[in-house]
Length: 68
Image 1 (cartoon, rainbow, N blue to C red):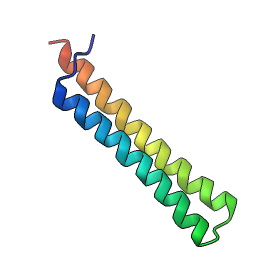
Image 2 (image 1 turned 135 degrees about the horizontal axis):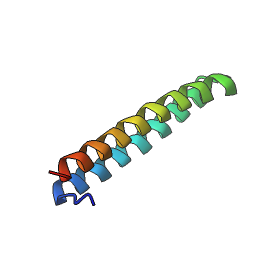
Image 3 (image 1 turned 90 degrees about the vertical axis):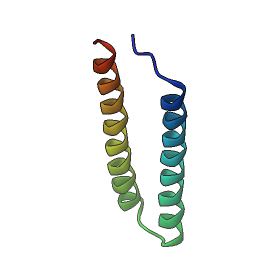
């Protein structure tokens, strides 16, 4: 079981907030620039994929460090 410290929990929620802001800002800018729907979704899926990978990697490393 992974036990996160208070600092890790705070950082996790800060990262979630940054991700939400990043996705909102990309959507907002693409709407203002009148980007096509396909272009908008390609960019959003790229950002979402990289963010998901980073969060899963952080969780995996925390889990592995908790084993020892």
